[in-house]
Amino acid sequence: MGLLELIDRVEGESRTLTVVDRQSSDIVQEMLDDLFDEQPVDVVEDGGEGTVPSDTIIASGTDGTAVRSSLESLQDAILFVNSDTYISGARDLDAVDTPEAILGLADTVFTVEGYPDTRKQKFLLIELSRYIEARAWEHGVGEIHSSFQYLSRLRDERGTQEVYRSLGETGVDVNIYGIEDETIPSDIDATTYTDAAVEELRRAWFVLYTHPTDPAKSAALVCYQLPGEDGRLGPWKGFWTFDPDRIEDVRTYVTRGF
Image (tube, rainbow, N blue to C red):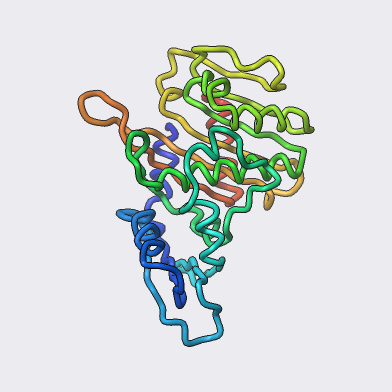
């Protein structure tokens, strides 16, 4: 079994994202449609004749669950954000405010393109990675296991470097995985796991946080980069989850496999 098999186990979940009485411009709606284009999330508009405020987004599942956020919060977290926010560290961990409606898309498998694709679909996964890191930092206990494909990213991406330096200053046990093309900065208190012979490390992207006493506070993002054309790396396939059993499955695989 590998990470891709763990992801494929989740296939079949789908969600609906309803925009209630949108007052913002059509451009915002177009950005929202593009964000979830070809994903298992149906984006629909509702005229809003009930008690739900205008410019609300509601994530609902086939099981009847539904969570809501303001459309503005989604704009601030993803739609109006550029990649420099994550790379440069322009947003501190205590400023991470992921909309509940996005968190409500847990256990939905996304397949998104990375660079050089200019669409923001990958930002969904990046936002959830920051959310999980912020959750670990806030609680200050437990374990975090994070894969970067290549350890040089902790030097190249100043924002990510600051996040893991901050995590290492808490009581969280920080574990970092990736191909050792460079060593991680010496002031990051973390244990590294690297093996150039493990091909899966080159394709793995996960951020897994486990709380030591309260499973409800744990969370995981699990992604795998699929093969592309002509031997190139392709899109990312993955999901995020708050389900304790799925989180434990991932933790068991990561700690035993890498």
